[in-house]
Amino acid sequence: MNVEYKFKKYQTAKPLTRIKTLSWFFKQFETRIILSKNNKRTLMKNTRSSIQLHHIILLLAFIFNSNQIHASPLIDLLKALVGQPVFKQSDLYITDDDIIISAYDGIQLHANIFVPTTGHTHYPTVIFINSWGLDEYEYLTEAARFAEQGYIVLSYSTRGFGDSQGKIATAGDQDIQDVSAVIDFLLTNYPVDESNIGLAGVSYGSGISLLSAAHDSRVNAVAAMSTWGSLTGSLYGQYTPRLIWGALLTGMGYLTGDPSDEIAQNYIGLLKQENIDEITQWADLRSPLNYINELNVSDTPIYLSNNFGDNLFQPNSVLALYEALTTPKLLDLNQGTHAVGEVLGMGNSQHHVWHNVHAWFDHWLKGEQNGITNKKPVEIEVKFGQYEQFDSWPSTDISQNTLYLHEKEFDGDGDMKDSPYSPWWPKTDTVYSGLDTFATTGIPLLSYITEDYLSLPILSSMNLISSINAIRWESDWLNEDLQLRGINKIHLNVTPSSDKALLVAYLYDVNWAGIGTLITHAPYTILNATPNEDIEVDIDLVATAYDVPKGHYLALVIDTADILYSPPTTSLYNFKINYAEGINNTLTLSSK
Image 1 (tube, rainbow, N blue to C red):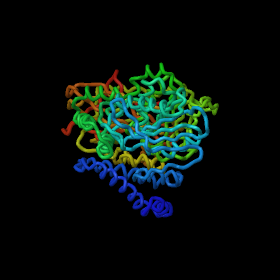
Image 2 (cartoon, one colour):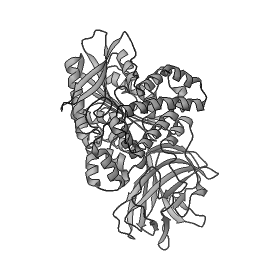
Image 3 (tube, one colour):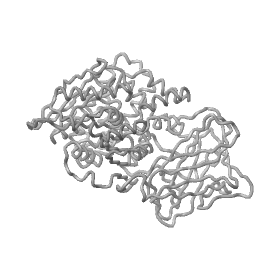
Image 4 (cartoon, one colour):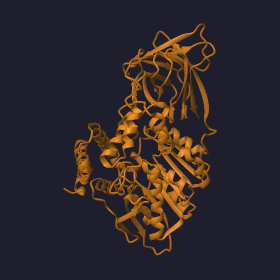
């Protein structure tokens, strides 16, 4: 049964049949991978679970987004997943799917290329770099679009993925040298305009693009989608290992590629809080923020795109990267989760991110005066709302407002007030570990997809959140809308009973019925504390763009567990929030 027939069945089917149809596609994908990797038939159980979870998320995204995806690009993407890549035919270009590039160490990188046939002496060139777990066929739809517009387009599988040889280098020095080898190959064999070479990628490919721009002066523009500023912060931000995303990436690496031993070793090390210095050094070498001087000296124009619901590459480090860059730059912060919008948006000329990618390259590689550099350089999509534009980031349109946290009262929650809290004598509130609460980030990955595509918020009832295993503070009812933009911050004075503790903070928009919509959250892990001694903790919440309506109130909840994050210990502990004259616990809001 061919892919076109299956897709036609999908388009006209009821939701249950759509699930079955798309399950067929992903079963073919998984079978193809396993058959090509017979030496990995003894995959770990959690590896298979991770890939199956990834299938479910993509599957549901297709269902929810079916009316927003053009049929042809979706068919092509599905064909690529099951080993039947489609090269769109056109009189405007020729294609070659048999490209092999020798890397600096002799390994072979497999690639495909689109070359215009319009008779020009040289052409601007775009190099696409695959996402984690995918290969050179990921971008065929966009490669054809660029080729029709007069670009040479080469897509290759990074080492360890697809048919490329070598071990997965996880955006390390080998990957950077491979990009340079790809550029060498293009300049030697094709009519490439050496002054107009761009790098682009989603997720894994985006980070390699940024790092390569810092090391190879021949890179003239970058489009980095679902990208990261700090890999260290993405894997271990605020000293907290990412449990679900780490398992997914590690599992995908073993199932779809040929990973180096360090991938699993580093993931396990993070979960066990061991060898942290070595692991963070490894991640720092793969963090564009650590090459900001090189990027700024190169003056390479850089387009950055990230998503507020991306719990892999959370947007905080991307904001820091954007702020530190002095190159020509453009930033989009969208709603949704990691990479889903960018992958499903391929082939759609009206898709916000891909429209900007084309305009960015058209300006910087072809010299078109299309207005991309005249508009405000920061665009932020408000949750359940529209895009807003800012002249800069940090923006002068954004101000900080501090709320002071008061001790719990008889009704089980504390207040958040505009003025400092100075009790007559020192007081404490105690939170106990051992049980999770109804404060939650939702179903991993899935909740942020349904939030974006179906406008289904992540909800919690404030009255059902345990006052033993969590603490909750509530603001006054709002007299006007509160437009939160950027990174909100928490400062706490705490006394942990153990040397290790996990704090997970959630910020809610609460209606008259006590139902809270999750605005943002963040974890923070206390390590190497002296038990029963006072310490100060500063938590940066994940950046957000959210409008709290008049007549609602804010609630801040802190508990000790969330499925997204790995706890530092299985032992029971508690922590006290301390209140006293001269010390303050605060929530600082970033708002328009």
